[in-house]
Length: 390
Ligand SMILES: *Cc1c(COP(=O)(O)O)cnc(C)c1O
Image (cartoon, rainbow, N blue to C red):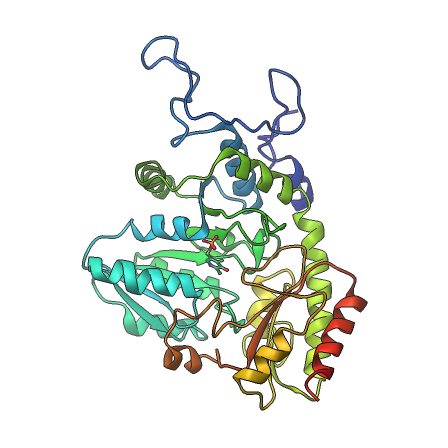
């Protein structure tokens, strides 16, 4: 059996087998952790395709083949973090180039764009992408890249990937999609016309809150060549142990995502009927402004749910967020365990208050990463936390 010939497999089979071969020297079914920095050469330049581990490592290669398969893509490149992956994409640009992106971005992306790349002369337009046609107003002869996130973090806005890709193609722009919140199980942007898919592998792909990593997936050979050059030149590559942990995590991605979606739906419904909740952000509600787009481009609605507490000041919100027994108060998302996060002071603290409040990241907003525990325990935990408010 060749595990390279995976295109006809279903998602779960790909997650377990695609790109992963038994080790030829021992038959080990699990990809070995090639913990080495260099490789012995027979004579200068004569080697088995591996010269130095920043450029290439067999454990990382297996992982890259596997993630490419999950996105139905041709090439994948892994990075030492999601931010490392985003950094590589922006380095495709040069001073004077312009990027059109959303006004509800992951805080770290906003920080990198404004604090690192704007001083290098790249211009970013942070705009409302709930209607993709807005993009057209900001395109000029310097525009090179459209960078979108969907669902967005933390207010779960949905951006129409296909509509963005149509605009990108008409104007010869690159469309990059941060697919972290959906995971490849729920959404495949390349199939909808995107040029680059980015993942914070740290989240659902890794899935066990034990590794930080990023990935880019592309079909275009020209983009792959350029990004691979940047990956090796700038050096934000992941190590073999982390690559192994992610390969292991991905083997259950499909099962985990099913439970994340199931639990996420029940938590969203519980919150929606609770008298102490002002608003729930979850794309599965028919009342969500872009529900029909979410239905069109996602397989299900995911395990991320945000909500605003009714008439709660910062102190009350903090007290509530600290009163959970099963949910842990922590940054990050996508792991097996349920987390609660206060975006305004945690994940999104680097976005100025006025900017974040415009998109709903208010002091009373909380974000849940609903894990795969028993739903009754999660709902009971939420209930007892609300009871501390009275
Ligand atoms: C976490 C996250 C990132 C950054 O990834 P790291 O692995 O933390 O560097 C980027 N985008 C989104 C949507 C994220 O949630």
